[in-house]
Structure formats: C-alpha cells, structure tokens
Length: 229
Image 1: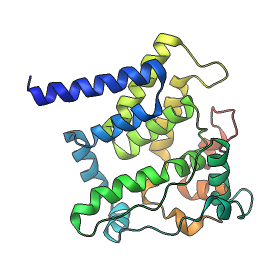
Image 2: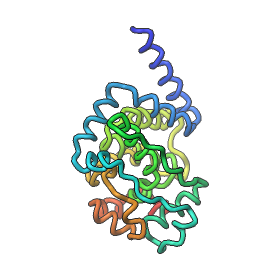
Image 3: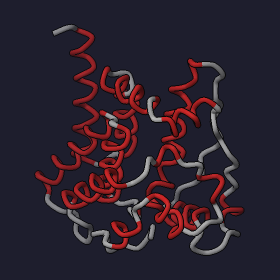
Image 4: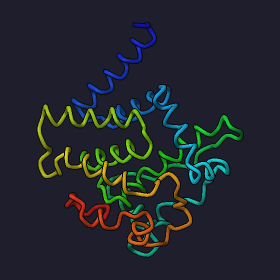
C-alpha cells in the first residue's frame, strides 16, 4: 500500500472513530473536507456539473441575497426565510458570511462546495429534518443520493456504527429509519443544489415542498420533532 494512501486511510479512520465515539461535528466537517480530494469526489463533481440546472448556476456563480438573521425573522411566519432563521436560532447557530468566489473554471469546485455548505441548513428546513443526530443522518443520506458525496457515505457509516455500539438515542428517531427516510427523500426530491433559494425567501415552506415534489413524503415523515417542519 502506498504511504500516501496509508496516511489518508489513517486520517479517515481517526475522524470516523471520533464520530462514532463522541459524535463530534468538527470531525464530520474534517472528514467531508478530506473526502473532497478523493477520486470518488471527482466523479461526484463531474456528475453534478453534467446536470444542466446545476451547471447554469455554476456558470453564473449564482449567489443571491442572504439577509441577516434579524431580517429573516421579519418575513412571514411559515416562509422559507423565517423558518430557516428560526431553526438556526433554536439550534444556537448563525448564518454564514457570504463566500469569496473565484472567477474562471478553477472556481467551479469552490462555488460548489460553498453552495452546499451554505444551503445545508436550508435543506434541513425544506426536508423537515431536525438538527439532531437522526436529522443529520437523514440529510447525509439525501447527500449520498443527490450529490454522491463519498464523505456523506462515510458519515452514514459512522452513524450506523455508533448505533450498533450504543443503541438508539433516547427520545430520537432510530437512526436507521432516519437514513432510510433520507435516501427515499433524496431520490424523490428535485435537485436541491439547483434551487435559487434566494428568490423565494418569502415563499411558504409548503410551496417550496410542492415545487420540489416532496410535500407528500415530508407530510408522512417519521420525524415527530416539528422543529424544522
């Protein structure tokens, strides 16, 4: 085995062990970031660039206006923007600053990664997945189907390993059921990465779910926590 590959595997193993043992969010971010350099991630990015709707956004480096958290909360209750800001506030989070985007083809991957990272919590909201261990597992499953991200598949593996070792988290949906829900949601849903969220902050969550084709599956969601519903 090449020394470079051995080192990468050790890094992945360290991050996975920390995720299984302590569910450290920063380890998940490290694992995802490291996975971006793999051949599987190269293939995933090529697949995303081949989607005409995503390619259009990438070509124009689309990035609409993201209001401040306080501005979002002035939008109508039940709107995408209001629900997004409310979910962030309840979880103790905050809106990420606008990214610095590069011109030219070398900036494609940067735009892609930044767009996914920025939209992560929006995806939670429209998919009805709370910011819990089970909710994050469900969104990782959506990512596996829609983005083919190898890091998301590894995160799912960590969730399942932790579940095998410690059992279900009391008061939360079984992580296996959450992953199953996320896989089906990702299959049915229109491409989340192709959406211009910024042009519909004031539209209702229900309208967005109808547009994405997921209104029925979210209505029958196994999540009982209505945090992001």
